[in-house]
Length: 379
Image (cartoon, rainbow, N blue to C red; front, side, top):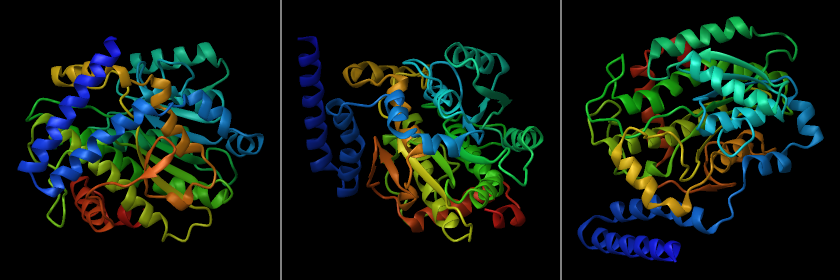
């Protein structure tokens, strides 16, 4: 009964909001409202796969043979988040576990503190004692930290002429949500944009030569970049042809939506560049919405807490939340959808996100991140 009452109240609230948006706002705002809330409906009516189920489906002997010993980087590897579940295999810790424990990849677990990385790796090791995991410090909100991380990665995993140390996967998973207005990074950039977009953008640019090297060495496997975005990319008005407000003050959830829109556009821009680079094996880029996952994201914001509680009946476990990341990382022959935004196992339309806007974002991001002409040319 509690479930039925909650569902009815939420449905009534959404109908009232839709009526308000329809009569008092533009068609763009109405489209964004529908695009934003529709994934909640999808998540509540679709039987969401767990990351384990995705691994069972995709990790065939042939694919396992290709992935054996290859290197993956997963940012935001902390207990209670989907990044760790991409590495592990349980309901509470996500992406890196599957890649290390079941795909037999060498996984670099990137995070801000040694203690949290040690906890994450210890939990993974309980299930997969032989998992190859390397902790490396990374604060994606800091451009200096991103460059230091890449330098450390090159030291730990120097490029080899054969298949050793081939970087075939980068999962940009780290993120924050709904920080107080006016919060900035060490570089003076709006904190959510710095953490959710600019840092991962710089990381992807600096690692592009390694991804291309792996794609050249293993054309049957290729390499992939996976951006964990959000349905919140539909919150702000379309960027259109105007300069992107990459470093603009905004209310917490609007700033979050802006940064997630940047994730979607960034994947589109990288996909376009990768498609023209002449690499034998394709380097692909994807963005995705993990769904309404109960994680530590937004734990210090009362508004985020209320959203989580309001939609308690459509919460995903971390294992379910990591499933789309793993699908984009492991699904064979997904290159034809490079640049696409995924919900579950299917590409979806993204309101207001065009290739032209993606190119404007790429250029402004490159400037704000301090990329040299040589570094830009290497992408």
